[in-house]
Structures are given as C-alpha cells and as structure tokens.
Picture 1 (tube, helix red, strand yellow):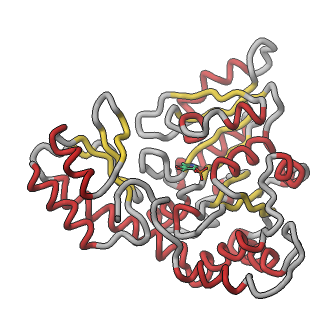
Picture 2 (tube, helix red, strand yellow):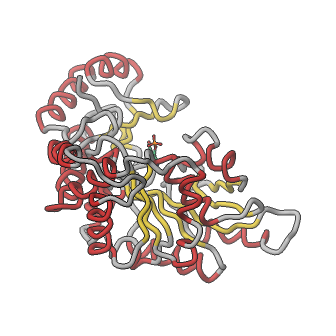
Picture 3 (tube, protein in one colour):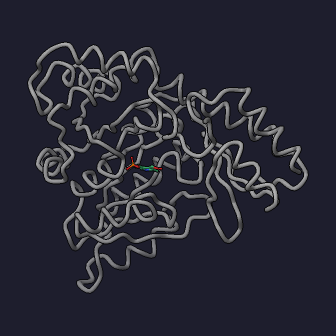
Length: 338
Ligand SMILES: Cc1ncc(COP(=O)(O)O)c(C=O)c1O
C-alpha cells in the first residue's frame, strides 16, 4: 500500500537503516554518553553552531519537553488554532506541564505580531495566565511555510516582550528545502530559542531531536528531558539516525523530493474542474476540496485523511518515497472519477 495520508506512513530510508545497524555491533555507554550520540551532537554543532541537543522518541514528547523548558505553571503558550500541540497531542502539553495554551485564529496557519498583540494586555494581570512562549510550526499544519522575514519579525517581537519562540520542526526539513536557505539561516539566525528537528516524517524509524539555542533554556533541560520520560537508555539508536540524516544532505534530498512531488500533484490536479486547492502548496502537503462522490473511491485506491469534516477539505501528504508514477496514477484516478 502506498498512500497520500501522512509522511509518517513511509518506511525507513536505507541509509538510516544502515546507520542503526552500524550502532548495533557493540556495547556502548547508555543514556547518551556513547560514541554515536557524541558523533551526532558534533554534526548538529557543525550545522547550527553552539547548541544543546537532546533526543526524543516522538514529536509530541519533543514539544512537551521544549515547552517545559520555557514555562512556569502560570505561564502560557501562544499558538495557532491549528497547532499540533493544541489539536493533536491529547492535551499533553497542558497536562504534563501545567501551563495553558492561548490559541489564535490563523487563516494560513501562521502567527504574526499583529495577531498576538492583544494578548500582551494579559501581562502583569494576576488573574490571567502570562504569555511566555510563541509556538510556531514550520512548515505549518496547513502546509504553509514562514519566510525568513516573517520568522525574524516574530522572534524580534517575542524577545522585545520577554517571550521565547518555540519551533515545532516536525517538518523543518521540508520548510527549509522550500525556502532554499541553510538550516542555520532558517532557525537560530532568525532568533528561534528552542526547536524540535523532525526525523520520523523524513525517513527515520523513530526519533526527533530537540535543539536549544538560548543559554537560559539549557540549564534545566536535561532534567526536564528525563522527567518527561524522553531519555532513551539506548540513545545511540536514535542519535545515529540523525547522523545519517545530516550526512551528504540526506535530509535535504528527501524533503526536497517530497516537496517536488507535492508541487507535481498540485500541477496535475489544480486545473481539473471541480477541484479547489485551498492552501498555498509551500512544502509537502496539498489541501483540496473535491466533489464528495470522488472521495471514497479515490481513498480506496490511495488512502488519505479528511482534514475538515464540515467542508470536506482533504489533506494529501507526499513523502520522501512518493514517486512520480504514484502522483500521476492518483491524479488520473481523480480525473476519471470527476
Ligand atoms: C506539526 C506536527 N508536530 C508534531 C508532530 C509529532 O507527532 P508524533 O508525536 O506523532 O511524533 C506531528 C505529527 O503529526 C505534526 O504534524
């Protein structure tokens, strides 16, 4: 079965698989003090500069640990109404951190200073939770990508108001490939304080990396990492996958391919009568509204999810292993149904 359901439906890239096997031949020190973790940390430092790296099992765990590093229980995280931390983590951040989330309406999934400004009135009012973190996803849950300018503006605004910026980077590789800049330019150089670097959606078997750039947030991070149950005793098996991902630009090759497949899909379907592409296709997602009678038969050929049950908006995701043939076959199947 191949699908357009999610980029976490795909398997493990062979170069990542090989890296896991390389780490499997010997005994190594546990809890991240091993050769393979040090190797991955060194590569992260070469790419991003001075950074504290912690590895997690999944994206939800990475977000919870990041937000734990940034907040006290009476503080709040500003996010989009579509944010994974709000909509798709079963309340994990609020449950395990104690802070609250302040969601804002974001038609294209992106936060701006203008949208956030009204929340500044809460600051200093003892009856209100205190905005302390702006959490963004890059690329966003709607497949849109913040420009460098938008990121810098948001980070400057946050810092001027004594807030941190957390970046949910489950799909950071797709966003950066789309922007055509370096990982460093798109993150720490824009002023991001703390982020997750996604692996699972870009060819890893398991794991995300937390990257902490702000020195203040590094102090307690290892303890929060352990408390949030994300410290893997056999950490080398997560870390070595990142070595593979960051070697010979594998992250870019895979993300760029997934993005190209989304562009191809967009080109193939956008001109079809009855198809309405609803969001800007900036990375590896295509959002569409198609006639209701076509949804089930198309989904039986290639699974995908409905994004909005009210409007019947559908989400089609491309992966590093999506092929041109699959895109053509999917688009042709839709054309026939139409
Ligand atoms: C934007 C975003 N953040 C984080 C995650 C992490 O999810 P998980 O905990 O399933 O790895 C996802 C997965 O769908 C996501 O889309």
